[in-house]
Image (cartoon, rainbow, N blue to C red; front, top):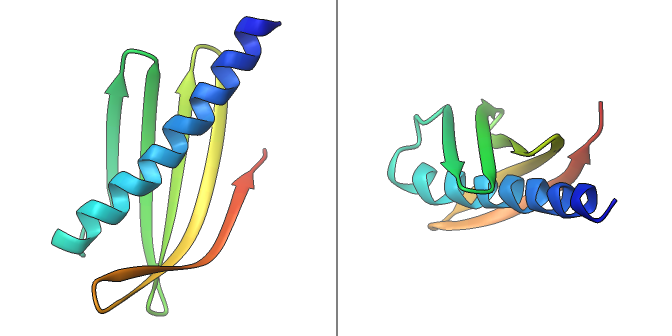
Length: 91
């Protein structure tokens, strides 16, 4: 049970890190639409959509058997990110 909880938290942290990775890379490359990162503890897949002037960034963190998915709606103003919405997605 402890291992399962640990993997679940790691998957969530990976997803949150994926969102931060996307924000950093979008400032340099606004045309970026996806990314994937692998770590010792798991991996994260990032999908980026542009809709009506805002970015919808979805990050799926995987650690062991655990999967956690986060979506942030973002807008950039003067080089600073404004979070318009945040939610953990369940499927």
